[in-house]
Image 1 (cartoon, rainbow, N blue to C red):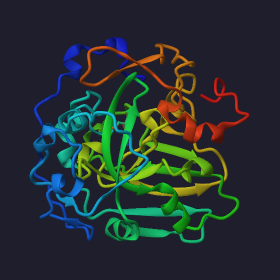
Image 2 (cartoon, rainbow, N blue to C red):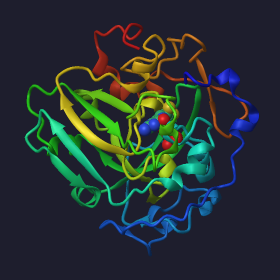
Image 3 (spheres, rainbow, N blue to C red):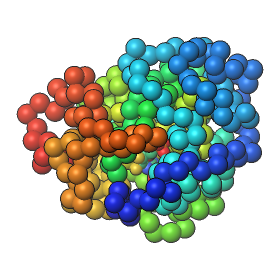
Image 4 (cartoon, rainbow, N blue to C red):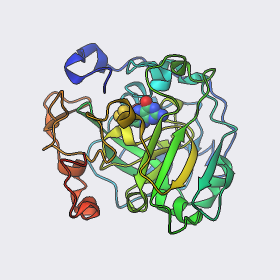
Length: 321
Ligand code: MTE
């Protein structure tokens, strides 16, 4: 991102670090059972490296595999949990795995405000009870031109939005991450303006591909991936997928998201994956799938064009990057 461009990345940056198994205490959520083994729950598909999961983490039971999943080869649990962007824990890709044990994902609540009929402060345990959880395997394409394939656990963001009954004035939804310098050491530095803020247009938020993620690889969301609840919007650059959400606000005007606030010339509000629009400092035509040697071609909307391109009919996506 602004702070580190792909050409600055050394090979050591992408060498998976030793898996950091934080001693975390999870309060058992209603839909979570410690007894269920992820492999049994999720069936075939996870490779051997799945066995390197955190043995202490709670596992989800009875996950339904979504037909919206890609069948591409998964990145290993180790890749997914040790090569992260989460600036609240530092700028290095290994910092989130190293420091995120300081985050306390329970108790946790999400405050819903703004132009809706069901504002309130909702406990994560209650939110988990509202919706059946699914396994969604999505490609994540970072703006830094690397990508991964991740088996998320979550539920449609649109179901959450509907439940909050936004009114007709609500045109956007804005999300904010926790601010707590004690839990998030990176916030002691002015690397970004805190809190991290993201937003979606209401029709984007209602699209069935957009989910709120609460886990991955069949287990409760590891802290470094945005515990206990984060956004996953697979057709947009990864920075839209805000982690550790504490606030959801329905608003009339386009929210000023963190990266646009930081450097509007380089990062826009829409951030749709687009191989034809270069970042001012690097090309977006290709990407490096973590764990692979050869680069891949980047696909429009990260390969989800058939499902989402119609959201942007009539828009100049070079201007609205
Ligand atoms: N959310 C917060 N709060 N802080 C961040 O620094 N980084 C974003 C996004 N969400 C970020 C965040 C970026 S740039 C990416 S690519 C994805 O998280 C990475 O998600 P992952 O580490 O789970 O792969």
